Image 1 (cartoon, rainbow, N blue to C red):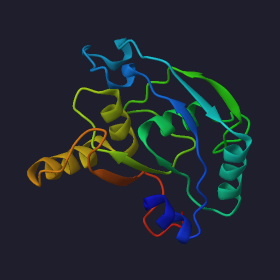
Image 2 (cartoon, helix red, strand yellow):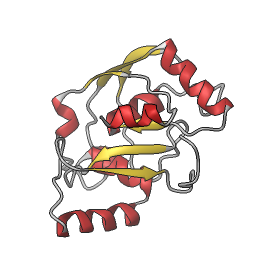
Image 3 (cartoon, helix red, strand yellow):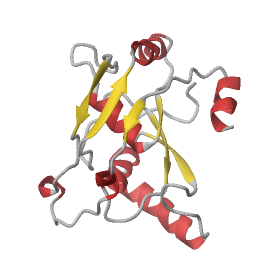
Image 4 (cartoon, one colour):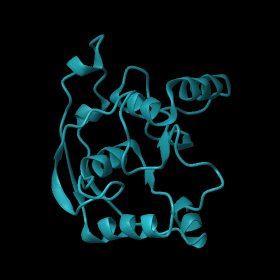
Length: 168
């Protein structure tokens, strides 16, 4: 339903194949995220998806990822020779995205409210800014939003990135 609404607004929707493992939900138990044993996930970025990001950049549109694992896949597939673009590939990633990470591909993120002490929450904080995301979480808890994979969702612009007036 949401993807149909995006399509009705002339947004190009292209799938990304992900094999999400249980490690995605493993809590972080180290004080320093750099010491967390990051799990691997297999993903595939098709030639259609790579071409879609290129078309978006050519027309000045934003790249919206639906889900944190899609962010990991797209950022892992970034083309070092062409900033903002991805290359078609099928591989594993162990990319740990945490505050301080510089995003190259994704401009907007539609994501669930993830549990504390998770790499997924760290990614969301890196994307939207820790203070802004935690404020949103406080509101979600106060308003009794449903957290985790089948819960409520939020739409975030990348911190320091595009504004709400941009076309997706």
